[in-house]
Image (tube, rainbow, N blue to C red; front, top):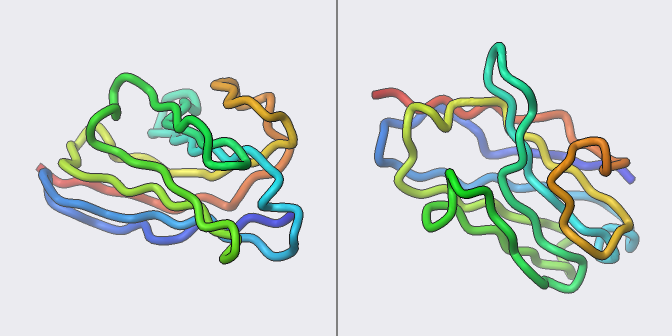
Length: 123
């Protein structure tokens, strides 16, 4: 399973971005998909995830109410809609996928990873 994350960029605080995680093949629609992020000098952290059938989604407390995860299985794509962005949201964002039918918050759970997309929020 290959994942392709895209949609990152530079945005001012308070702005919005939508990230996409796309894959080919039918397997993707059977996988739980999660977003992680990693800021310079920090560990990779859970942002949020959505199960194979759209269940959940589950979010980290720091983004709850500002970020929304959704999926379009016919398009083999999961989206991360990010609103009211803050400078502390600056990081490389990764999508990850796993065959488990629950949304784990540990990066070690996930077998498949996208290449990451940079999000920079200026103050």
